[in-house]
Length: 347
Image 1 (tube, one colour):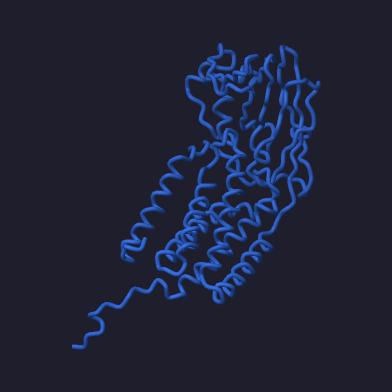
Image 2: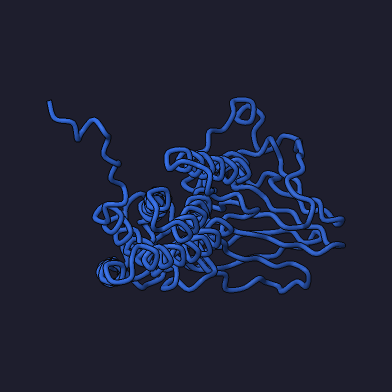
């Protein structure tokens, strides 16, 4: 941008970053009604009895969703909590949900707080089903409240132990081609975790990058910020994908993705005020992502297929790199406004 004044160059970069943010958020799918999140509990499937070829069950999001996958040629029915028709997996891969099942509405919320319409309550569990198509690939996931802890208070078992009572084991009944089948599993109240190692990682990373930046300049710290933003985008997208159909909160990946773009501008223009502004934009976006996902440092079970340590490390490194770039940007003097000619005039 050799022919643009510094002010126009800054405005162009700000507008470009704003456009990138709009594109990222505009193309992101909307968040699910109740996406998966960090938890104290881990639910796992023990068995499907009897075993049935072509019927697979999986817990998604730590303990949040029960996902059922049915091969073509097999029909499966999932009764609701009152024994009413709830889900139907057709032989051609179509999955249907009963609009007149109270389970349809209760299962919209992780805590079972979904409101049941008056007409559904009036119809009752014996009403003829009103089917709606919810999937066409033989796979569907839902908040089944038999597979996760539903209490508001902590369970009366030690950390690291499995829950008892109705959770020992939990059971979900199916009808597979008209024959009864049971999915059984267990819920574990996981050991606590501490955020201190990851906050220490943030402090060490911040101190190291500030020292590096003072020796080599803001560009070196901006490169580290770019790497932290890339890692954050990977781990954030993994949590976003843990909510079935990729309908988790798009901020999980959109915030660090914006930080990647802004940090890249900061690397390229590190010695100019506009580059410093881009670096601060990346800092703001990545810091917001860390705060948005801070529960991942406090809860033992994370809704991701990635190693939990890698996920938490991305938060520590993102926080540390953000602090370092912010300190270097403020102390570099690159944001100082040029003196106006009038300032040198004496009265």
